[in-house]
Length: 216
Length: 216
DNA sequence: GGGAATATTCCC
DNA sequence: GGGAATATTCCC
Image (cartoon, rainbow over all chains, first blue to last red; front, side, top):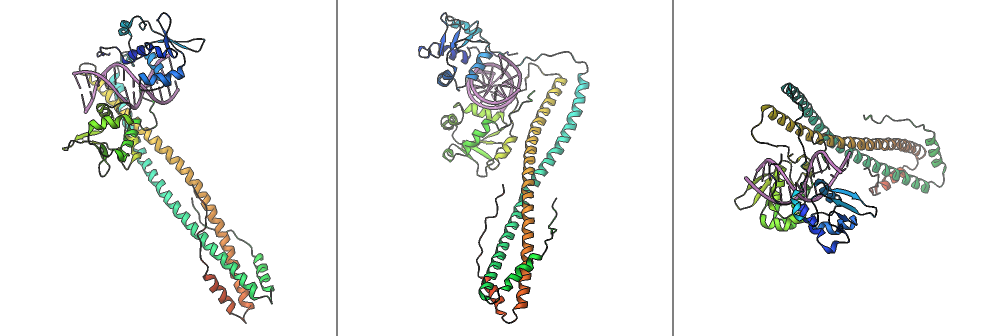
């Protein structure tokens, strides 16, 4: 168990007590009239303005968590206030604070006795071994895949560049064609039929699906 | 045990990395020339001026404790600097940070030495812990690769279609050109200079980079 | 340097 | 509200 307990009173308890001792904060946190519990009246404002003065944060939730760890009992009042109470946390009895203990986190109950412990340990070891091997394989595969993805990205980039290049070539061709016909029209006012013929002729051509390439 | 690991990289690691990324602090904390370890040159001043900017305290010792929990190796240099090193904490490889794991507190040596059984159980637990960490890494990588593959497939399909379309267009143009010149040659035996003019004229055209498309 | 307590955060 | 991880403190 916790053989080593700090002697003093927890920082959290002291600071919380201090807050309650501060008249300026009465509109946000205050003892009940008789001093056996206290209220937080506006948790939002309280969190933002008061908490950072006493702790390293401004989360109401964290404050709640602490109260909870010290076994304070919370109650929601009708007027929206939060009320907190602890048997040993009272205005008139600061000395009682030494009885407020923080909940220790984990109780390790030893459970039943295990006769076949060794047996089960061995089995577990074998399983562990299997898992390790498998995991190792997976790591290798994963690493390989990662590299592949990088390579693929590269290939893709390459392809994209190719495409761009092709596009440029195409543009040139188009321009070429365009110019050709311009010149043709200019120089052949006498026989405009030629252009017509060319266009007609070309329209007859049937298109065929080309076998481009097969990728995956 | 700890079945719940946070996905992200520990706040401590990120903040420490940030410090090292800050040129203004080079006189107090700085990467080694090659970036595989870092130095703290004046721990006193560092603690007072730098720590509170990145953490909630100004204790060099607390900072040390964290480095220690994350298995950094400390070395005291002759010139008084402190050097820290971790396999996966390097300037050029922020992505490796996911492999820097916080030591789990799990070791509770209650008193005397422990039975062999308990010992072996503990070892197994450690191993399990390691496996879990590694598995988490793998899951992250795998998820990343999956996303990558989807994106790549999409990009690739898109590109393929583009390419096909372009190819068809090109074919049409070529055919068209071919026909044009055939007709031209037939009908213009008298003035062969026209073809020449067309070719010369076209050669002068300047090319311009077209905006093709933007992928991912 | 590291064990263990308390403080704070995150999440179910 | 509480389990569990990380952050900070304290101490040997």
